[in-house]
Image (cartoon, rainbow, N blue to C red; front, side, top):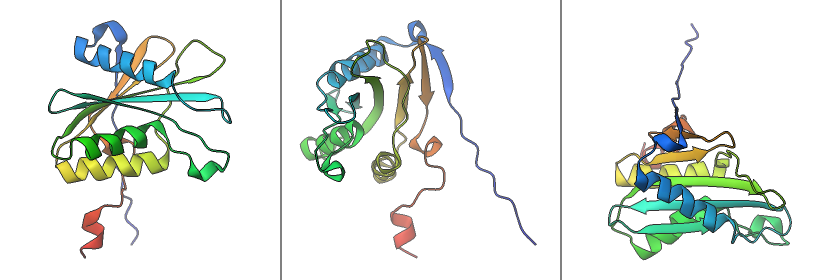
Length: 162
């Protein structure tokens, strides 16, 4: 007999003025980082800002390449940079922003599948959830308590040890 498996995801929607100062600052850092993106092909600027357990903020932005697969998304730039510089620090939260290069306003953009997998790997390894913040054009900010909300049926190191 077939059995239906349901996984629910949950996001909390805040207005930007309801966020604590630390998270507001993280979002602003992600926006600044997005403006430095190298995106001549997509003209879509993405920025990510991570808050580490040591209080440091690590930035990333998308880096494109004429050979498209050789580019890298903002989230992976930030996550890889954080772990190369501070391998023993946990990632507490990440703010991700995006906008078309010809527009002023940032809009909500969720991480791509590859970034979701990378973020999930770090969350699994540190055995602590990473909060994700996604601001939108209407002034709201979506908060996820875990990467699991973006990748509920993830592949992890546990799958390799069967």
